[in-house]
Length: 402
Image (cartoon, rainbow, N blue to C red; front, top):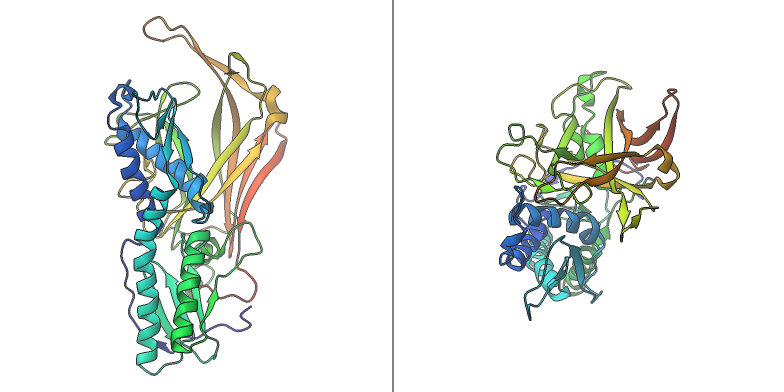
């Protein structure tokens, strides 16, 4: 643990980098999925497109598979595509499922990790060539830098949305060990840990929201928001691709609703409450759905985006990071679910029935702490706490508060 705040005395290299972060992995997976699904144009119905399906699958990959994907795990991965039917002899496509092979993901990771390794080695070598002790090599892509301080502790500090990946850490740790062995250096690998459910990336994001230079006024230097599936609105979501809801077959837009926006003042103790609806299928395998029922909400941060209702993977939200997921079992609230019906079906397919739970997300930033809560409110005004997501500054670690 760092027991003192590091004061930068020399900036060895200026910020630089490229598209070597987590987003490059998503782009590579997207290309694989496009090739898989391109021949299956029959999936494009009621405004749903192959591109929209791919974006939805990429989002599922980056939130459910990528964070814990390990290069040493040789298993393949499967993503659900409702209505998908394989052609005779077609590889990597199953009924209602598409396959992503381990070796495909591995190649994409290596295509991204190799340039990151080169950046790391360039930073370390540049410091040595200038005769400087490498106290901190800050690998926060795409803007890494090396610096010296008055503290003689040599560390490579890894931050950014990609830093928690097991494959990322194993690959770069090995590269650093090889560098130390060949140069007789002793630079240490350092990944800040948090005492909360989020890592140092989220903590750093919260810290950036507190502009202490302005005294009691706090200005958001990042935007904080919630991942949303919004009911499709042709005018509001113009230019985006609708996504078909699995439970009710209605079109949705996959967006981020920015609750705290870049540049706005953060009022002390202000809470941002948002009413949410979560849908579940009313039947499974032809029988009434008895659960389990699970909510899944996302909290996002961005240093550039601030406009809501735009595509989560669109240009405006490029570079935004998902800080974490709140997954909550709400089976015990089954009696409060609402049953909804839609009789406006074409081609005589009859009604569509699904279940809906209405609840609230309550979002708050107070000083260096961020908290997002899932809350269920009863008709009499009382409420119960379902789950929460927190981020705060780990004791003794300076992540660049201004």
